[in-house]
Length: 349
Image (tube, rainbow, N blue to C red):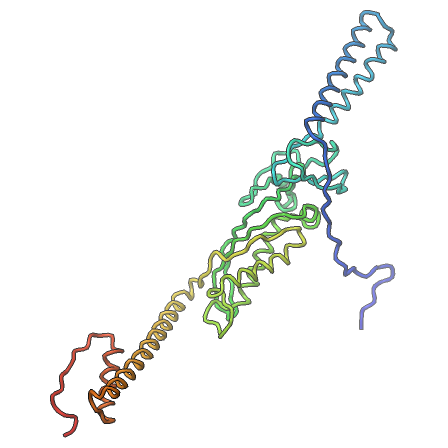
């Protein structure tokens, strides 16, 4: 029987938050706006100076002087505000436009651009660099975690392909054997709105989900020596890598990330069982080699007996055939060099 909620308390929502969607916006050329801003500065300074000079020489009244200086001051203020709208974007770099907390779009035009000067410009402190990613990160404040305080200067998000080399993880495979495994993931940001607004930190999200997916993958397959047609980590690297890529893409789609490639880079037994597994592999290799040797020896003995019988070289009764088979098997299967013995007598007393 379901428990009743208190009066006035709404039931928790089971619907996931709607994902953000990127929309591209266009910006003005920075060079054209630079010429306009410089012209506004020149005109504004000229009007202010002209009003001040005319007022000092009593050539105009105070009201007329302010009529010249006032527009000049307004032009200077407007030009000063507009000068904060210049920014540059390198190839495969975007800027997420956020105006007073509202997402307005993403700029993908590269080069020297001009946009709304009131767009959020990110932290004022010089950002540091995250190890292994090269992404600019603001220094964490006291009492706050690095992930919670990470920002991107002017909300610039790179859409270049990035490589995440996972650390070596120790997990149990499908049969419970401890193994060491690692992988390399090549990924890029496709939807900048999802990357910035749908997850707290998309870089940390990629790292965490990648390690989680790799652990799940390693526990789903045996390391080696699987049953017939069974996929194993060691023998089916391509199939396992494709499964890892598919699993990563499903997990990282929420952050607007596309996985270009995922491949295992390290795979080995854990040190505590490595020697035992090595002896097992050596024993299995010896058994396989012996089986091939015996199969080859049997076929050679059969061929020898058949050739001797068909060509009538010698007639062998069952006892002589048994003796020849025994000798040939010793010669063919023995590891030490065999010394031949010439029998001039007879097998019968």
